[in-house]
Image (cartoon, rainbow, N blue to C red):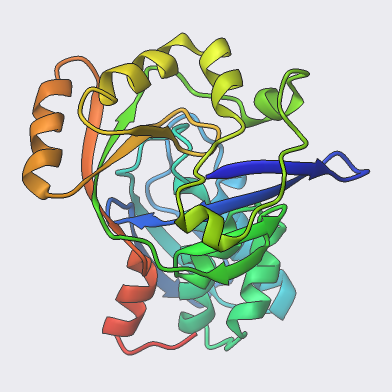
Length: 270
């Protein structure tokens, strides 16, 4: 769900939205070093290292704490870039959480979320680590539990510009605020949907194709679309039917993020 309920004087939109995680994720390996340098062992093609959110997050943490340590970071990229699945934000959150532990900084989660917000509006929820109802610009987070369905995600052959969508004159900006109970009862609208479908026919076509199997929705501003399924078999059957036309993924929706689950499994607290 993504409702736009207003706009601040500085241009930022006021939202009501709901985040849930999937177990499809990038894998990041951190090698702490003592020389103070932070670098990627496998830079993403086409992305300058200084612009990578992982590097930005690590350097922000170093600056905030006057930390003299460094890290060499390996990234196995599995999430599609430009799909609106929060891959970059999740990677940045992971860097903040893990390096906070490896460097022995011991900042509380609330402080990490504050730092994460300066990197992107949805970084805090990946640090928070649980499915959440969010308001403001996405930084006011409240825990919520949602059915953990199997999910099919389709990535259209385009990247949606979030700035373009939020700048569109025809975008709804005055939706009525609702309560969590209203969302649970079925109010799942996405105010960006019509604008995205108008400007990106590939997204509209993906929604139509996926809707043949289950109710399809847009991830934030897209480009990815997704649908929930009651069983892994139903999700996989939809995947098989769509995979020759689209870039498709099958995943499990989870209320606890893979990052938080991993930290718990390794007996880390943050």
